[in-house]
Length: 230
Ligand SMILES: *Cc1c(COP(=O)(O)O)cnc(C)c1O
Image (cartoon, rainbow, N blue to C red):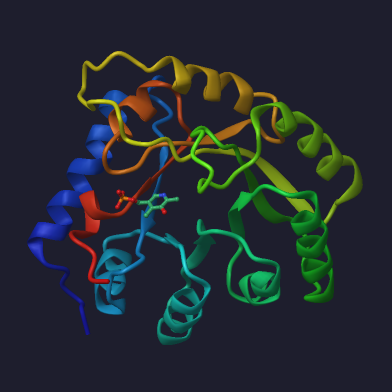
């Protein structure tokens, strides 16, 4: 169908990769780009796939399942970045290979069980740390990160703990020369002590600063794929 992705998408994809290399703390190791496809039609995902993108992030279990079915002819690696709920864990394990929003021991246990039941191993997870005081925000308290990290690594061999993920409010002005926020430096330092030491930080509005802070993985939606239809 979309053998020839539209020029604008190709250009944006190319430019975004260049930006990441230019801004990366270590230019030899720019952050990985996770394309966030929530609110985007399957056709758009096909176009980006045709340009070489393989990993896509989704926030809603329903939407993820529907898209995974519709795009089952493509070897896409789906990553779940939405709020985690017990009753969705089994389904998420059936279609995805990574969950970035783990923040509770009980969910980690359920996840490990579902992975084992599915006959799989090495299911990738990130711990989500809460960087915003608002009650509505999800994630682990800073002080609980290392305990949960250690417990997962010693007790749940079905999971592969990659590192730390955070969703800061985009309160900072992003640019090539922006000063790196202290919060980002603290996140980088904490991530070094979690699992494989990876940091998932940076979205459309702060990807330059996140790259400069040494993020290993940025999650980009609208700056790459355009406005979401909701
Ligand atoms: C939606 C979302 C993104 C992408 O947001 P954009 O502003 O479109 O880049 C990244 N991470 C998480 C956790 C999200 O929910």
